[in-house]
Length: 99
Image 1 (cartoon, rainbow, N blue to C red):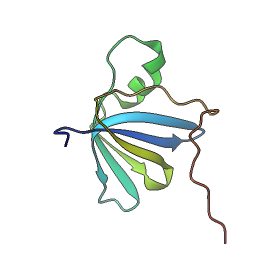
Image 2: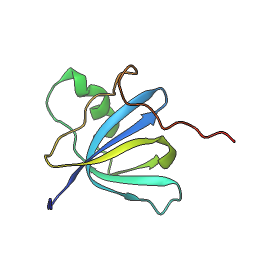
Image 3: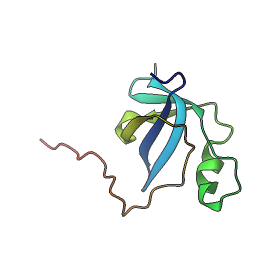
Image 4: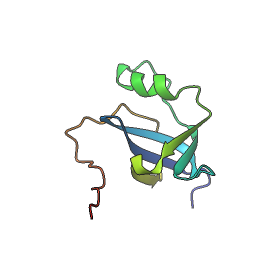
């Protein structure tokens, strides 16, 4: 078992799919939200990570609507957040159920 696990959270934000990494992920006391803390954001001057760095650097905690979550993975190795995934990727949102 990993002492300090790293989680990859992939979620939809507007028209983009965002991939972030954090050490703490749990169900929020706010009904319908996932609470994410301890973000892992790369500090290098890589222009590919600018959007995620801009959006998540300095954030203590983020509440993400559960309906926006695409996938959550627990990783064996520590990684840091990447740029938004391009819309042509293989990650698709869960289909809506119509009755």
